[in-house]
Length: 403
Image 1 (cartoon, rainbow, N blue to C red):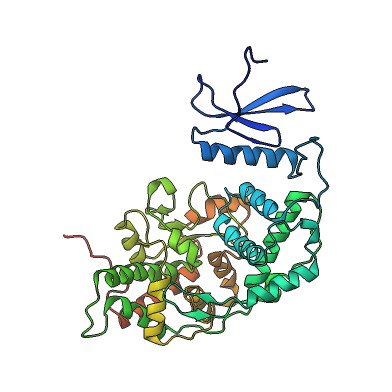
Image 2 (image 1 turned 45 degrees about the horizontal axis):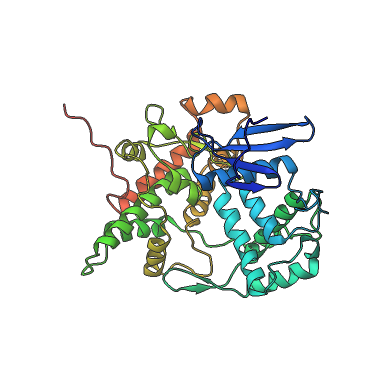
């Protein structure tokens, strides 16, 4: 027990209190453990007040399983008597370390926007039933998606269902009981784009980046956009990666992605947990290996290429309505390669795409075997050569060493 009266906590939630101690750099969390019948403490792991508050919230949520407490009597409230806004805030606190956090947050922001617009800030979790969900779904589908350049398009059905799925997860985490509604699985409402690019169309994308239209000298920003888009096209063609993984690729040794000696690229950076959308380890051909060896840090020198992609899509008259987004390279390359390799090699393509994987032991060693995914790699190299033949400089050949 403390020898003197403790100061007022800097922050408190449900009996979990945050203090600053003179003999410690990091802030400290103190709470009373009913099971052990004594006071306990834990470092917040930071001296930053806002970060420490988040640490208190996480500890509270983990130890109480999200059940809210009455501030007067200290008893646990019934599972339904929690505001939806509180459930969402608590859930976001719990999942902040997940790689998919930004996507989860964006989906739940649709729910919060609806609650604000309909003046439902005090809506209880137990009041969210199928009828409420149907009203939210109808509202969200009427909200268009507007790009930074002002281009408007309809919202996909899967967008609404992803938000509803995350809301169910937030309520379940908060209350410990099942939500009173059943989301539709996104796979049942997804509309898979049908457009696939040919080699000629892929080459036209590279031409857009390397050889701008005559008489149109691009500004500095346009040059940067084209440079980033060119890098994105290259890494997407040779790895068949999802757009987020392509943008995440790096040669930084600390990320342990690029192994130049083995010519292997791990699409999942070191210390990033794998998610349901598995990121594979893929072999890289000679042309792209040279480019990666000459790259320092991020392969794509931009956090996003959406604006540059949209400009290119308009220039090349690519299909609209979600048919030709940045995932088009992955879909097109998968289609091209599948049509070129024998059926018995389709399993290699599944590994490239992250749809299949080796077992845990094989996965440690297989990427360093000389013929790892060799049949698919050989066809990718042929596609790369064909694109460069149509657009010289798309994938330059390595310069032979001087004699």
